[in-house]
Image (tube, rainbow, N blue to C red; front, side):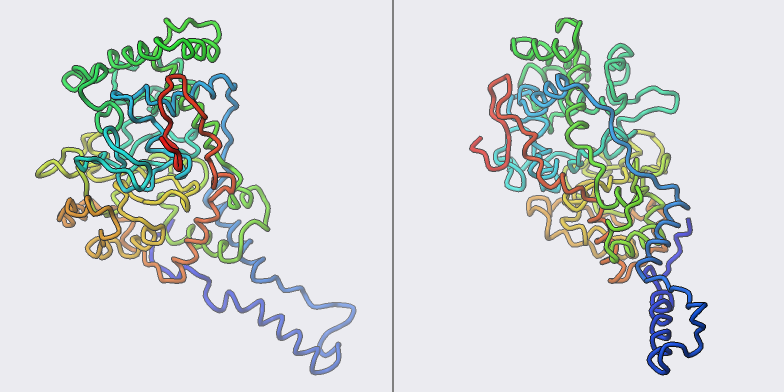
Length: 475
């Protein structure tokens, strides 16, 4: 893939030559009846339309890059999905019983919350209106939950990942036993539900029986056991678990059974494969507009596919993490002077070359999932795309004013350090306004229409009897 700068829309000769040929043919007819220079027995060759040439070029690039339609997830039986639905929305899993998994992944907000950085326990309000009395935020942006069955590395630093030999690497280390892993129907994709419950700023909080002692020794086994005790005190949950895992007594289950159910619900309800781009990949030439076709061609030629695949994983295997020269703000992860920086992938690998590399964001339904970036640096998709036009310059010109006013003072003046490990693949990219417009239209073609309204996945109640977070509710 050649990432060198180029004009990304077709040059005028490419676009106009078919039309010019058609016009010339018409001129010949108009000037001399219908036979000047044309043998009626040998009609002129039909000139392909501009749209035909756009389709042909797009399909050539698709073949060249080996892009394929999204694979659909395996079916999961309804008992596991329904158990997972209840667990995902039930605040019983949080230390102080005041947030659920879906508080930061609201279906009405396309599985996000509309904030640059989510706000966890001890807060009020939902979505963009959520606030904490002490101004607290979580550490990284809340990622969308679409098509997780095909992801092999989770979280912005890849803290949860499938290993080449078939194992699983997670923050829990040996606490996630082989017996527990055997419960995870989707393998690595069933594991992420086990970890938000352990983060104080996300769900665990402090001053409750779940959190007692966890900060000192990170005993995941003990934390997960305490959660199962909580769930086991509710008869309905015992019945739901035993219905979902027929033949296994609740008392013999671990929190891996809960995580597997949560992720089965998420994968069942939030996997989409009928966007215009998916349908085009399957052979339907009528699904993309001319502008979207131009955007697809631009996407595949300006350097976007150096990182994004747009099909199965949305990132090339082994190429999932990059330093895209994004500004840093918020609480940070404890790195750098003052502890407010975030070294990203380096925190997992220990390799300084991975400093400030973050997971390539998935593009599925990206039109619906603002803000963008590992701390939600960009509130609009246009702003995020425009950032890639000469990233060194756009980093120094970063405008934080659209971000939550409480976060603006936390912006770090560390641009020089960010650029020290910035990905060199980005350096040649230059995007003119027309190309940006084309790319934005193409990215909209990655939206599945059925993802625009997900409110139907929210249950009316949960077994604990606690309130459910839903936009527009009185909870």
